[in-house]
Image 1 (cartoon, rainbow, N blue to C red):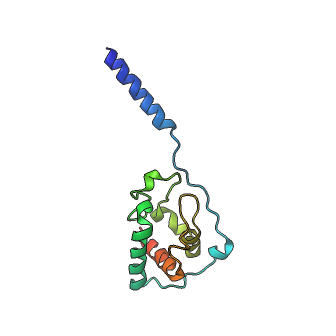
Image 2 (cartoon, one colour):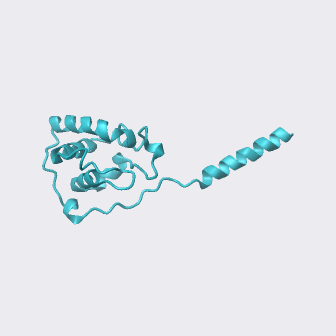
Image 3 (tube, helix red, strand yellow):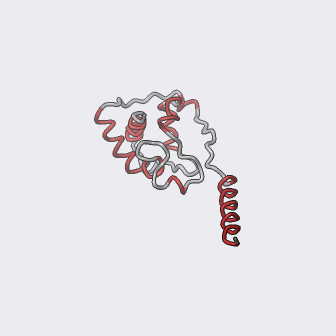
Length: 132
């Protein structure tokens, strides 16, 4: 009987903690108008997608996941939502994605120094557009 009461108490505590645990929140990410209107100068051809995939795998996949669904190996350690690209990207311009890669915020680091070549960042944008 005591074991049943203890087990019930532990189950209630667990459910309460899970129910009231703070969820990862997605907050608005303002993008300067200059970047919102920026056009992608790199064609999404086979070479660009190959380069983008390689860069994405190296720099992005651990948080954003293989298919951009926010389920990478490090995503559980983040305080902010890593996003779901298949769902979130259609409403964003290429320039906005470029800005977010280069500038970063919160848990998302700036890749300004790690990926200094602008063309490489555009390759990543092109590759991200393949996520469905």
